[in-house]
Image (cartoon, rainbow over all chains, first blue to last red; front, side, top):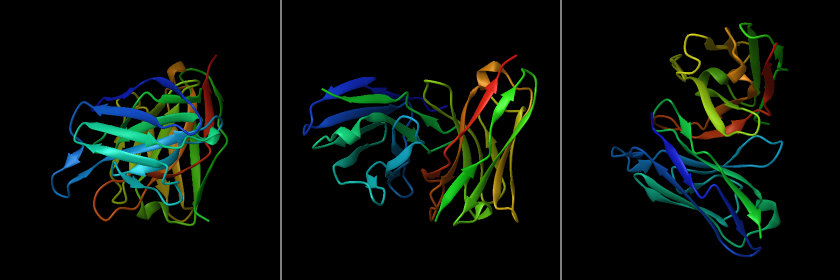
Length: 113
Length: 121
């Protein structure tokens, strides 16, 4: 199974600043056939289902603000949230869909400092 | 509107069974890859099972042999039959659609609101 490890487990960032969340996979998520990484990022607010933010490691889902960006390849990935707003308070998960069993990171709780 | 509507969950005793359903609107379940994902209270996300458009099914080791994923074409509904339930199966169960992709599997773009399953005596 591919193990997904996020860091940090939690972080507090000031409004207007940049939050950075890291995700590492135990195996490569890069498909050499299409040069795409099977890595997604989700945002989950209390009492709500997860919301897809980023897929293929760096493609923003329709309707997601461009303050959210994803980067990385192979086994190391990053979610960056710039110009932090109060509404960004949530738990963020990375997810690999490279192979079953599909797995998620443990989550990173983002709070306002 | 593209959406997934989960059935009501419930309280079941250890060793018991429960069936979840998830009705889709705005797209065809049988033409898409679909999954069940669960979240224990206060915990993270755990993938449970998937069914591909070609009908192939996949399960997490933790539920293999106890859970069965299926779909009903005319009802455009996804199901999860859960047998031999254990206390560790207590969770909020989400159905989710894998985003349609030209090739292979994609991320979960549509999620239901979730249905709570509690396994307790």
